[in-house]
Length: 377
Image (cartoon, rainbow, N blue to C red):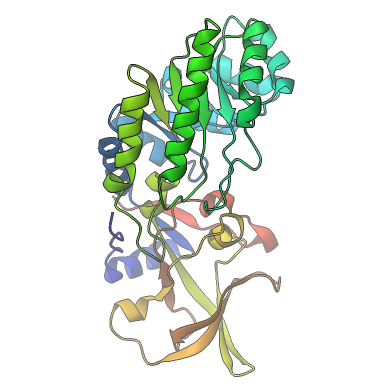
């Protein structure tokens, strides 16, 4: 996948004039394209879009038209898919830790598949054991991941067989296994390791007389923020080959979130003011770390940053600068020591690849509102 094209600068200016800033421009066509590309790269795998990075009805509606499945982790996410008319049987609830009311809310919607990863969760399902079917999540720690999602969830592989036996011994229906090798993984090696271990656990379960029939390989598929990444077709080739070899006839699930959402939005913000401090030009935007750039903190991510004048070929020489957000908190500095052409108040700046873990984790701290999302296609 190449870096997505930005909207035309003239259109960006027109949309900013119409809607104000900060503004997130959402392309549902990009959502569809990303879903199709990953579907082709992982044939035979049901892609359950994970709502977490961008839980928007417009995204869900576009994916519904593509025949997608969905991965939910909260009652609020249930509400989003229900509002779009998603068939509940096309969803799973994958949060390993749940309250009783979460289980009841999801079952009332009609979704029956849940995830567990420790023995303290199992009694919660006993009142509903005739309704629920479970996937057991395993932990595969991964220092190479941008976000190691096995630090917080998942049973250790050495304890997995015992936990599986415990769940089955309690009369619960366990359909299979799940894992997540970590977010923004730049190579597929950890996927191959995890798939191989899951095959061993499937075999151990079979020796106990239990036939597991579902494997959820999670998400983590990379996108190009600043640096290029391996094309997804090549990235997924060894994953697809290993699944075909190790798990023929098994229901296969994946949970892409970032890969689908990240390229779909472009942020447009404005320069609120400027100042010269210790020889550096400071620019204060109407969006920052507490807003759409929250992914720099929570997602350990970075984004391209471009004055619109530079895209139009009208920018002057670069100067060492600092870019700050609008709040009265000194931590709200988006870029330090960045080379930028001189800008003036009300100048527009853009950042592409802002669809994942940006608006979703933004706040209205200091009562600066979150960026408005506008669908552009």
